[in-house]
Image (cartoon, one colour):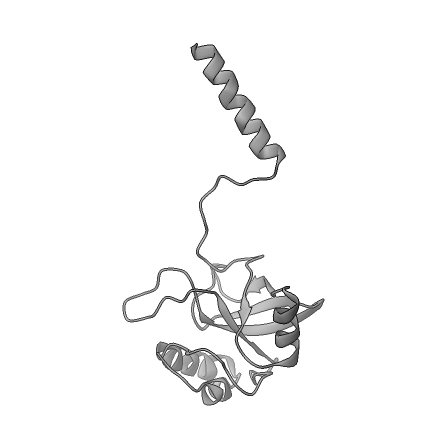
Length: 153
């Protein structure tokens, strides 16, 4: 009886791996190949989201390689490479920082100006202090991104 259940378990595991089903837990962090949701009204972002092909993260510009709110990321969208700022994440946050239902990104140019003219979702107020520090340190100007945001949480 014991040998039979062992064989059944082995057969079940083989079938799961053969069907490409994953048995690992969900990963609530931004790293490489994470799907993101464009929340501004840039043309390339609207087209990608309408086609059902959301952008994927290629690189996170920090030391750990795990994205947090306010981090700069490189995304692949419609066969192109664009930079973006993370403005809302699913992962557990510090106190007083809201947790979102999706991983949100705003597309930007190399100098920090956003590609769109409006952000559709509320962004966290803590983003103001985070982006002010990064504006002074890196030379890019993220104040325009804060200017086009209409709602803060």
